[in-house]
Amino acid sequence: MQVLSTWHDILEARDPSRLGEILAEDCVFYSPVVHTPQAGRELTALYLTGAMHVFNDSFRYLKEVVDAPHAVLEFSCRLDDIEINGVDIITVNAAGLISEFKVMVRPLKAVNLLHERMRAMLEQIGG
Image (cartoon, rainbow, N blue to C red; front, side):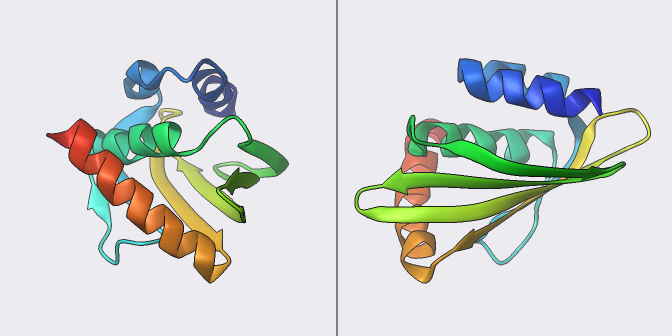
């Protein structure tokens, strides 16, 4: 799945301006802290951009399981004194673009910290 290679390039470069290259227009983002799906390329890009700003240089993928058109990428990151563990569950459409991006995070302290940081970041970058 070529889109995963591009996703890794975007993360490595910390270049959210390229998200439009990989997100389907009707992409749906599922946040670990927002109970309603966030529909559309723009909202998905906003959440992913916020996450790129919130997560620091300690963010890394630990495992990647791919069974096209799906992929599960396990990640780890340390914010403050909390070790965050989570997965990105990605679905790719027939055109090779991400049509669904779901994030799950543990432990509860990490979810609470991410909720606080993401809210502040989305307010800052979303206007």
